Length: 119
Image (cartoon, rainbow, N blue to C red; front, side, top):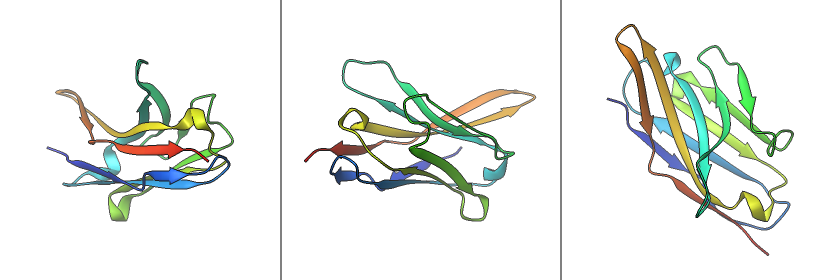
C-alpha cells in the first residue's frame, strides 16, 4: 500500500510560480510511474504531467513550456514546478502513482492540493 501526500498549493498571482510536492510512503518508489492530475469543478480529470520510472516525461499541451515534473527517488518525492500560472490553472491538483506488476496494475491517489491563481 502506498500513501501519497501532496503539499505546496496556495494562492498565487497570475504569472507567478508554485512548486507542488508529493511524498510517497513505503518502498519501491523508483519503480512507480508518477503523475499530476487536476480537476476543475464540472470538468473531467485532466492529466497534467507524468514521469516514468525511467525519467521520461510527458505533459498536457496546456502546460507545456510552463510546468516541469521531476522526481527524487532518494526522497520518495515527485515535484511539479509551475511557472507563468494562469487563472485557468486554478483547481485541485492530485498526485498519482502507478505500478505495473505481473499481477496487475496498481493505482494510488493523494488527497489533493488546492491551487488558486488570482490577483
